[in-house]
Structure formats: C-alpha cells, structure tokens
Amino acid sequence: MSLLSKVLVRRSCFDVGMRRTPQWHPHYSTTAGNTSVNKKGSKVVPVLTALALASIFVKKWYEDSKIKKADATSVTVDPAISAFPKRMGPPQWPFATQYGLLGKGVRCVSSITFKAYGLGIYVAAEDKHLVAEVLDSKFLSQAFIDIAAPSLPAKTHQENLRTALDDPAKAPVLINNLLDSGIRLMAKNTPIKAGSFKLLMDGTRKSILKNPDSQTQDKERLEAGFQELHDCFRSVKGLVARDDDFFIELNKDCSLSLSYYTKKRDEFVILGTVKEPLIGKLLFAHYLAGVDPPSLEVKQEVADALVSLA
Image 1 (tube, rainbow, N blue to C red):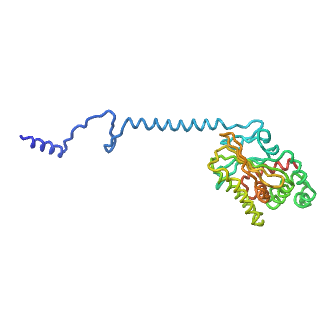
Image 2: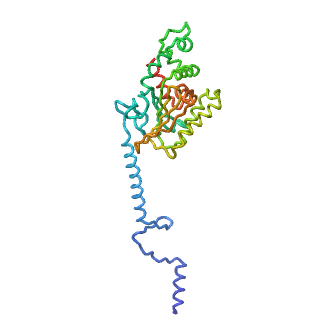
Image 3: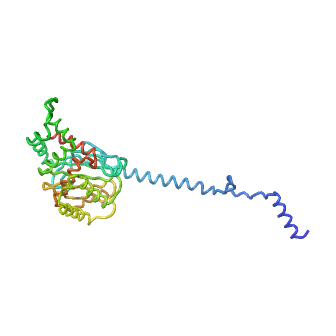
C-alpha cells in the first residue's frame, strides 16, 4: 500500500469514530465541554485574591488604629472618625478662645443611610452666661416660653424652654435672639467619607439657603456673602480626607472664620473670613433651629445643653 493510501485509511478511521488518546499534560485538566483549565493559574488567582484582601485589611486596620478613641476628655461620634474633644482651644488649637462641646452627631446627605460628616457644635466658654441671660429674659419668657394655658399643670421654665425649642415656630425666634447677643459658637465638620473642598463649600451654602429666613433677606448682601465664602476656598483644592476637620467659627458680630486641619500632615490652614453677618446667622440658626437641620441628633443635643445652661 502506498504512503498516500495509508494516510487516507487513517483519516477515514477517525471519521467513523476512532479517537486517538490525548496526551496528558500535568498542568492541564479537562472539565465539562472539553474546556481546558490551567491548574497553575487556578491556584495563583486565589492566592492573589487573598493577598489583595489581606492588604486591604491591613491598610484599614492601620488607618483605624490611628483614630483616637473616646476617653474622659472626648466623645465618640462615629467609629470611622476620631472622637470629638469636649473642649477645644489654645494652645493646642489656634482658635481665638476656648470652646466647649454642646452637641454632636452624624450629618447625613441625600439619604439617612449615607453618613457624610461628624458634626459638633461648640460654645465659647466665656459666653455660656449669655444663654441664661437671653433665654430667661422677661420678654422671651412672657412671649414665647412660659405661656402655658392656665388649665394646664404648671411647668418649670426649663421644661417650657425645652418645649419651645422643639416648636418649629418658636425655636427660630429663640435661637436668633441668642445669636444676636454676640454668643460665639463653632461647628466642627469631620468627613466620614473622603470628599472635596467643593463639597464642603456647596454643603455650607445649601445649609444657609435651607433656612427659610434666607428668602426674605437682601439678595445683594446674601450674594456678596456667598462670594466671600467662595473666596475662602480658592486657596485649597482636591480631596478632603476622611477624619480631617473643617471648622466654622461664629464670631461676636456673626462673621465667620473658616479653617481646616489635615491630620496626615498635622497642618492647620486658615481659609479666610466671611464678614457678611447674614451668612453666619443664617447658617447657625439652621444648625440649631432648622426644621430639616443637617443633623437632628445635633439639634436635639444642643437644645438639651441650652436648657441645662438656662
């Protein structure tokens, strides 16, 4: 038989069902559908995945280990950020005065499930006396606080004050009178998720505009104040890291002093001042008396603190 005939016979045998036994290669295995899988590769992928997960875990553990836990001088706001000091001021912090914490909580954005910032409201230690002087004044007491109907059981001034601070009509009047007294306050915003300086600026502007009183103010003054706010952020760009601090100080004249502290570089940056008093007053009135404040928890805790000081 010629060579060509032998080749044709072999091919015809394969056509009718004869199969040559495949040569075995130790680094391959067959699965359903005769698909070959690289056994070495199948071992490498889980190892790389495990290493990646371990790296993420170690990084998170390292970052979390740097977060200061609550102690006798601080309180926990959220486990993802450092505890908030109960007192802040010189010499550790370059503020004009010593501040004491009134209330703290989580500030949510878009949904109650999305935690954006830890928020703390502080009062100047030297100005605490103004709370009682304003909220226990004869005018506010007779017109807004101690005005229960004669048929109802008598309550203490503090009980009536707490009720008034929960009233959406009375609370803005009481808080605006307190702000007009020259009391100095400070808001500490600490990102729970990394964000940007633009988000900080936009969030501050939105809080101001959510105060219903903003709709009745001089539009030119309001826009001039917003321009000052914008100018404060011109020197900073990029991301705001988780657990950094953005401070807003309300001064006696209701101007705002803005500053930023980055923990990674241990650096305190003065952003600037918003001199237009409308901005400061509208912002802090929304924090403390807004129907839909940035943090209801903060609003409630601050109300409790004001009652205790009155």
